[in-house]
Length: 119
Image (cartoon, rainbow, N blue to C red; front, side, top):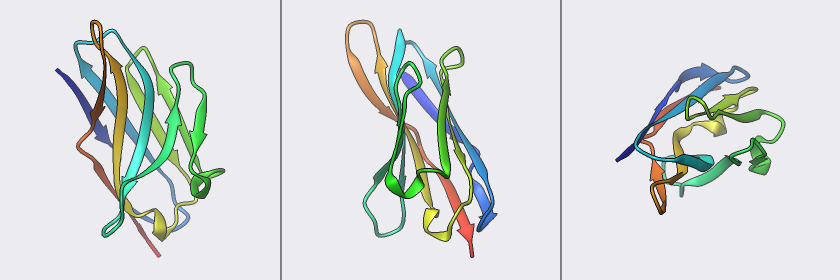
């Protein structure tokens, strides 16, 4: 079984920064894509950022230039550095990963971490 555990959420004022982390543990060969999603109350879950195994990032337009996704494959960890935060960034942030098990690729979710940005 694979677990994704997020950390780093919290309350911050507009214009501030937070760094989220998501560590994968369990039995697996490797992790392909790693992603951050978010879901605000009343909204659908949306993709925020994606990073490939070799570190190529992609971002939702609303966070480009403010958020940076990165990963440490040796630690099976993905990060989301969030700068210039806005109240509209308030949401539960979820880590998601495509994990390579013995012979299959399985998608896993973390439990989520709350990010609240005050005006």
